[in-house]
Length: 312
Image (cartoon, rainbow, N blue to C red; front, top):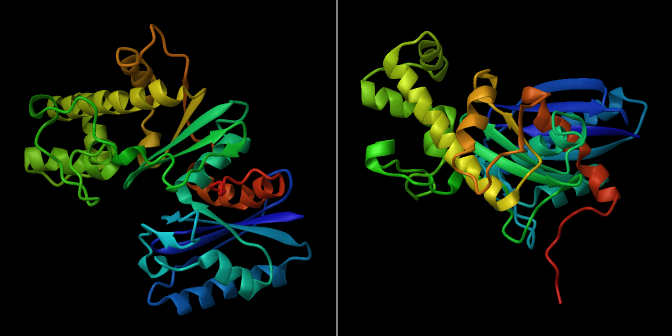
């Protein structure tokens, strides 16, 4: 039995077929159809049926998407592919394909992938962090994807930045979630560049600012040091609460090599322990982690590891 994973993004859908050892047997990308839900289903089913016709081996099906699945209703919420909001994609696909379908948030899929056979393999508790356009996260404990009644486990990016002050962190940051000073506004790639450009009157990319900091440019270097400090304060809250064995970082900013030298040092002064034994590592599979995690979703369900709210 193979495992087909699909990663639904705002512009593309990626499919990866894994064998039982995690080796890729097939990969395909297609544009995401976003005009209406019925059309989205049609295009997604056509993609899956095409893969099915190309293969001689049956496969399970897991899907990661940039949103949450309400544990009680099965309806999708908070998805930036907006035609999916309020829809029961899991049920509708299962009916169309005549096979079980398993859905999860894309950050959860990222963390699951890295915990199963990526950089977090062998660690009991893995906290996955994505610092790219936004700032997402997920939690895997002993190989089990952690979820709760609100379907928001790991959404640390929408906690307020610990210890925020104007003097230390600059002006109030307004988040699309309607709250202020969310962690995402400070340490995501988008927030990193937006705040620098607003302060300096420039239009530089995150990569350009990082490069300038590494070259010793004083304003960029100061901005990078603030980023490390804000990141450390934010992760310290996670460590004090969850005490993970490993933190795996993905997203565009995960490629900044100095992160893995500077973050552990900065974290030490913020956690409730004289030392920090949590390992901080870069994701093994990079951008492919999400779709690989989606492929592994049905294997958790087959072992009875799906978290559902308990009912009386």
